[in-house]
Amino acid sequence: MKLPRSGRALAAGAVAVATLISGGSMAGAAPAADTAPAALAAPDIPIANVKAHLTQLQSIATANGGNRAHGRPGYQASLNYVKAKLDAAGFTTTVQRFTASGRTGYNLIADWPGGDANQVVMAGSHLDSVSSGPGINDNASGSAAVLETALAVARSGHQPTKHLRFAWWGAEELGLVGSRYYVNSLGSAGRAKINGYLNFDMIGSPNPGYFVYDDDPTIEQTFQEYFAGLGISTEIETEGDGRSDHAPFKNAGVPVGGLFSGADYRKTSAQAAKWGGTAGQPFDRCYHSSCDTTANINDTALNRNSDAVAYAMWELSR
Ligand code: DTR
Ligand code: ZN
Ligand code: ZN
Image 1 (cartoon, rainbow, N blue to C red):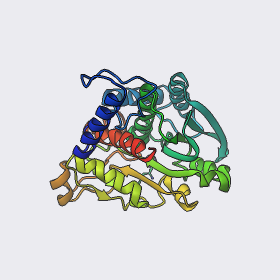
Image 2: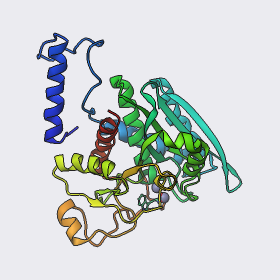
Image 3: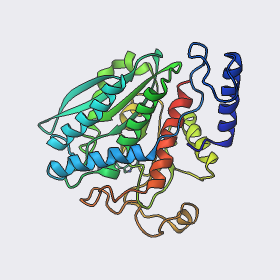
């Protein structure tokens, strides 16, 4: 985890304060659990773990007709994989059923026990692929990053002030069907409890850009702080208003944000100069294609964006 310098100093200072309060040694002995505040800094999200999820989701697609699409066995197997990890880690999981295009679809919701139920911070990604391919960048990348962030919460025993909820949506590729079904099912009282929804759809593009949604200024600023700490200049995401699962939340008045590494638009020379990669080529030339496999991922972008997911969830749920 490469925290922004300010974040590192804060985290170090806070740990020092916690250690001194609890009488621990600055030598790194963990302060007594009953006195230590919740960890102030998000942990590193191991890219090896995120990639291991991609490998599993690729295997699932390969074993199920080459895709993980809505209404197909590959989607159900993908959901079962993610759910099993979360159940084993202590999350309260719920599978929400809906119908789209005559087939049954499913959302997976995972609540981390604790925190203020009236202040919910959510991270979500669509888990379905198109029928033409395994959908590893679109969107196993987001699904794996959100899963590994949830598992990092469990590993650390993190207990933030606000309540943490994670979601994997079905039938996004059919028109945001699963996320819209969820937002509608919440009702106005349920929607009012959601402080923010963070969306991650395509965050490992092979010719990556670093785009931040500009819908809610606080969420946007949180992501920009993280990338500033890495010395990365981001751009506002302009390709997707309404094109992913944040849209139903935004339309219902919930503050939203998220990250995007690019799809079928082409990288400009100016973008290649600051981000690397190839100008004149799409950010993801395998968008919605059979070549969207585990070979269609830029590890650096996936690593940075996965760490940004954790940074934002920790910062926004304090
Ligand atoms: N609609 C998404 C891909 C996508 C295209 N533009 C954006 C912008 C922001 C997020 C996602 C997207 C899909 O095909 O799943
Ligand atoms: Zn797609
Ligand atoms: Zn997508």
